[in-house]
Length: 113
Length: 113
Image: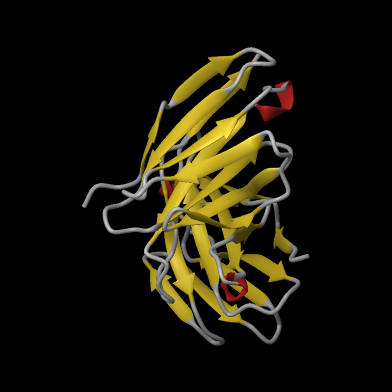
C-alpha cells in the first residue's frame, strides 16, 4: 500500500526566511502533485511533477521530484505572510488504470512578520 | 472556464439518515473523483468515475456509493449516517490525460449530529 509522508507537519517561520518541505513516498511513481489549502477552503493546485528531475517554480515556491529517491521537495524562498496555508503533496498511482491520489498529511505553514 | 462546483456547500444531518452530494466537473472533464477530508484521517480517496463507470474505489464501507451521469456530473450517497462521517467531502475533476492534474471543488461540509 502506498504511503506518503510529509515533514515537517507544522512549520512556523519568519518572513524573509527560506525553508523546505519534504515529501517521501513508498511506491514507484513518476507523478507527484503539490496542493495548497487555506483554512475552510478547497485545494488549489500548485505544481504537477511528471518525471524524474522535474523542477517547477512559481513565485517564491519551487518544487522538485527525485523518483529514484522517491522524494519531492517544496522549497520556500523569502517567505511572506501570504504563503501561510497547509501544503499537501499527493502521489498519483495512475498506472493502475485510474485516477487516485494518495495524500500526505499536510504541512501547516505559518509565516510570522 | 467554470471550475468544479459542488452542492450543497453545507449539510447537517442526524445519525441514521442518508445524504446525497452533487458534483459538476469542469466542462470537458470526464473523470470525477471523491475524497473525504477529516482532521484525524486527512484526505482519503473514496472513488473515481470515468465515463459513467467506477474505475477505482477506496477503503470505505458500502454505505458510501456514487454514480456518474452521461454529462459527467457525479453524485455521492452515504446511507445510515454515523457521527464519524462528519467531514469535508471534496470532488475533483480531471481530463484524465497524462499531464493533467485533478482540480478540486469547494467541498461539501457534512455534519452528522
